[in-house]
Length: 451
Image 1 (tube, helix red, strand yellow):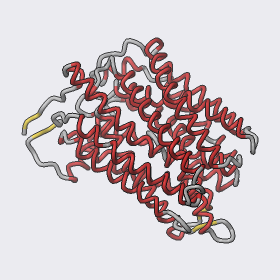
Image 2 (cartoon, helix red, strand yellow):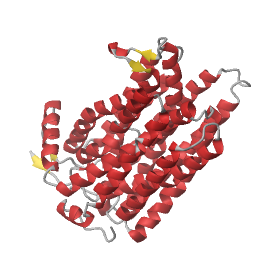
Image 3 (spheres, one colour):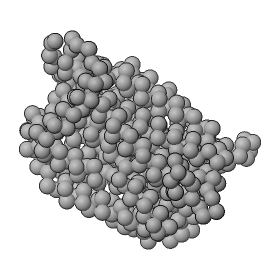
Image 4 (cartoon, helix red, strand yellow):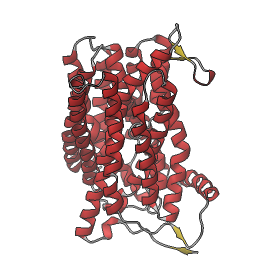
């Protein structure tokens, strides 16, 4: 059994590395449409309507014999999908790191997620159980594929490039979300002229996200290159994967500062992801925002998120990624707090809130990803990123659970949205305590020039 070193992108030729980086960006371009069109805009309000249609006289549905308020069903389904992801993602990451076969695993979960998303076209009537099942499969697949995708970042970009490369990837994703949302908005506004109902238009928009995801996944699968796994020359079974997963958790304890950053990230990004996935439900159910206004607001978020990701990337180059992320958490706290006071039936205020979200969302996520990449030991990228992905795009679980419980107990989405402030405040305190230079050195990586 031969042990081989991991070859990083930093050591490749410049032209080849740039080409591979461009291919890497395209998976953000491919999958971000699921996060935007499905999780952020259409599925939450639509699945809530389908669930309400199936509810009893008291407003409850009863999946698996449980009493669930119809307005909480979507949030609970998101939480369930992430709890399952916690099992699947680290296992997939362990297999990818051990075998060096990242691309087949990326392709498997990408197309499983894309197929499940396309299947949402059949979500109509009272089929809330179908909607929940498709959401769970699609979100688990989405999360797992992004674990593998993120694990390519340390391989396609050297330490000095990662903030910029990660920020460009996020910008690509938000640009794709904007393009598809424009098409979605056109379809939704013209559905009568096209001879389709509003519900059918929504289902077409949901399915189109799956088709987009499938088509553009081809680009990274063609351009990304495999690197040798941590161990070669032996067979690798699922039992080995579970053993290696247990080893990942044991090894994480050796990198206590990396673990502290991961804890901070899991807390504050749980808040970010809950805002992303539940804002459409808050807007439609609490503020009375119609679907057209909602799509327009999310489109504004996408456009501003592109600029925000690139702008915060430049700020990080001057002031350091950690300081920039800390500043973004202050902004998130203010934004979520302001959301509690938004008046119903006033779309202008909702657009103002969307503008604030857009400006900080992309940058805070992109810089967190590149910052974490500095703290991961070489050869363990996929395993460590599988732990990171527990609270990445659309895959948070505690935030949606708190959001759903707050609504179940109070029947107020305002109480649900204000409950998220604690995630940003606690995340800020935890991140403030992370010495990034020492954490990078402890993981065997160069210390960043700016923190």
